[in-house]
Image: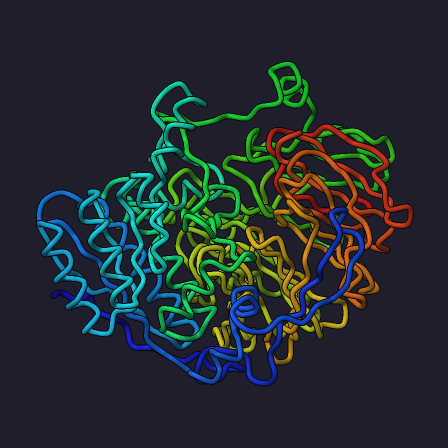
Length: 620
């Protein structure tokens, strides 16, 4: 038996107890809603379901289990991609565990036959393993499934498609690999072979996952590698939710109707309660890069717009919209209700902010080489009045979102592919600190008093808390599945985190850095961007695939409106007085304006290709 080295659990400083849970009473408050998503009642949920949604449960606090052991039964020959996928999943689980005071260990056994696989599973169970991953042919899968039921441990099938295995109703067997029926349906849909995963997938974070495989093993993930990685990931997430390294507790979380898992496929993945099959999309192979454009004529019109410095753009107000596809920033004149200028940039733009004068625009730019920092990665500052790039700040590899501290002295950025956050001095231009945060960090928010910076991490489902006085991570807490963005209330006592795959918003008590409530959004929501009204009475959530903005009343814990906007709203911002909200719609290539009093969209304005972020300026 081989064991991959297990990192020691290092409890984070701050407001977490020894199990990695926030101190104090911790319950899940869930909104049950009618199909419209606009009415319903609040329900308090405890146990495994609450644990799944909040990341900390009463069971976890009582047991305080700190270590999870998972086994992998490998083939002596072949199956290398499966082993690499499991190893990468273990590496990421160990990193996530370090953040919340827990640890993960992957034990490896080799087997050439079903009989040897059974013996390997027995040895792993005797070593404290609560779940075994493997299965690359039908006889071995059946043998491991029967053994799992006998030993009362989990078996996650990552390599067998036989439909009969799904109808055996084995209590402790879960199927990450697709069934034969799923593949036949995919063949009928695509007219060619369907696969669970492919190295050319790019959307929904797939490019980042493939890049991590490249870094780990030198190749992109194939279907078997993805399935093994996913198997480790969901067992770790179930352990984080249940707080107990006990098979029945893990099984209850994994098969709960509310359970949602993120496989970087753009939609929540769930287990069918009858067949224990992971329900998920398949893809055609080969699947080349998908380019979603707005049409050559529309793009040509956009590219013909003048530079902001070349024209009198008028008195304002304005929107500035970053466009990943056309690699530029659109200037929208809200008085005229149209795009009036275009600011070309050198690299892919995402997060953006203006300084109070409206004369300087900060834009996060990334080159085409994630996970490696270059002089093209950074936050560029553009002089909008006189034209041109004024300076650029080095903020680490592949910056995505960032904030500027309220005193205007520091810039905090998330480095998505490096797994770090960077603090940079705006006066000196020097990097003050680079800290390790969760896996695939994206969202960045700063508290109104400037004391705290929250960094969301999509793959580890965590929020890291940076104390700006020391520029160190002082706490980490779990939220929903695939957190994307965060925003603070005006008073700074609450923060709100969007969870894309869970379709929820986590409400955080800032002094304790603890989730105190989880708000459900309308069915089908994939929340991304978020903005809080200046008076704190409403929270506006861009729902991504749902193509709406959900308007939340935080005092009531309810969605009071679900306003249709363009396709795939990602970024959202408010006018200073909160009278209007604006969304950047990444697929329809436009911006939607929402009247926040009437709670309806008032106009749609075309911008560049694949708009990502949006910022409001009263004047220039």
